[in-house]
Every structure is written in C-alpha cells, then in structure tokens.
Length: 286
Picture 1 (cartoon, helix red, strand yellow):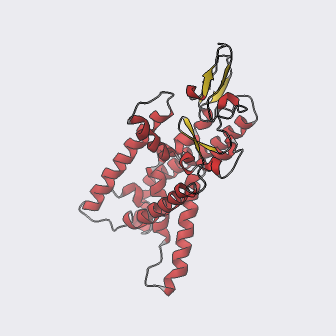
Picture 2 (tube, one colour; picture 1 turned 120 degrees about the vertical axis):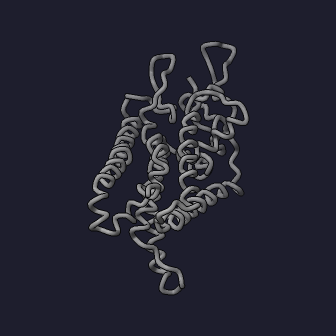
Picture 3 (spheres, helix red, strand yellow; picture 1 turned 135 degrees about the vertical axis):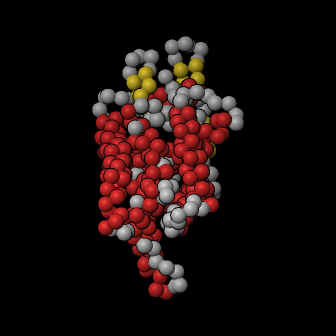
C-alpha cells in the first residue's frame, strides 16, 4: 500500500500497480522521487538548481535569528509586576503549543482540502520536516537513517549553535561595544527553545515506532514507507536512534526540569545564578 495512495497508479490488471509520474519505479511502494525531483508533501517537484539553495539559506538565517532573539527577549530582568513583554511571551508560548498540537494532524493519512493542506504543510516545519530545503536536489540516495538523523539532531544543533554564538560574542566583544553573552543566559535560552519545542521534539523521536500495515500483513514505518517494521536492518537503526533521543529529550530534559523545581527554594537562596539558569521555568510566576 502506497503512502500517499496517489504515489501508485492502478493499471488494467487489478493485481498490478505502477508508480505515478515522477516517482521512482524501483523504490519500495513508490516512496521516492526520480532523480532530478524532490518530494514535497504528496507530490514530486522538479529540482531547480538556480533556486534550490534559497530555502536552505533562508532556513539557516531564520534558525540563527530565532536563537539570537530568544537570548535577548527571554533574559530580561524579572520584575515584581508582569510586564507587556511577559504577557506577550506567555501568549506566544500558548500559541506555539497549540500549533505543535495541530501539526500532529499532518501525520494522519488523510487528503486535506485547501486551505488546510497548505496550512498543515507549513506546520510540519515545527516537526523538523526538512523537505522544504529540497535535500534530494543536493544528494541522491538519501537513506531513512540519514534523513531521520538530521531531523532528530536539530535540538542538539540548537545547543551547538548557542555555544558557537556564545564563543563568537566573547571573541568580538573586545573589538566592539557590544556586551559578550553571559553563560547563564545562554543556557537559559537553549533550555527555553527546548521547552517551547518539547512536543515537536518528542514527535520526531517517536517516528520509528509509528507503523502502518500493508494488505499482505507486513508493516512499514509511516514516515519512511520503504522501511519495514520489525525486520531488522534500517528499522533497527531507527529504533535505536529514536530510543536514545527519547531518553535524552523525554526523560533527561524532563527530569532535569523536575529536579530544578524541587531544588529551587534552596538553591535560589544560596546560589543567585540559579534563578537565571532556570528562568525559563519560573519567569511566569511572581
């Protein structure tokens, strides 16, 4: 069974089907596009070498811009009364949570009508679906493990990005009038991003465990239809990688937050910087 069903075209013989136009006829259940095409939602689009780099460059600029803005907006001094910035931040956080919840609808095998199909396609970016950067146009033969590794490592790339920006600020500060970034604020900013994207992070980590059944009884990973569930090979690698990041994100980060909440009364009195490290947890409260 093809996912999406439009990837396969029925022939005159009801027992035989072929891949739709622009889909790779040698790929399992027509899951890949032909060379020179990239997959966007349910279709294969032709690669345009002159514009293929634009989405990737835009994604990197947006990624770095969000990190910088988070540092300066999420580390303001905590005041006794709620400020306009605090109210705006809380409202934005609630909206982001709602959008992440809605993005789960995009994973359901349903053909959504316009304008919902386009809206859910954009929301898939919150689940680190990097199809919009057209990876097939830059590298052929991308495997399920490599594609999944890129998506699941985005939160790690966020931490590495903050370390890079922190180091750059220390390097350029002596030659400019800009203040170098503070370590406690940098940690708080990275944790703020992880907390804001917690639902999306776990959705990606659990992808290898979401399978659909074929008419012959075999099951395949919904996100990577060419990978058979429970048959070793690539699926074993996906499950191992997903398990590691479920422990890291789902258990590790959540456990660290619980520990910080329980230790906050004692540590905030004896270790002043503790409130800055954990500002992402307590900035809503007075």
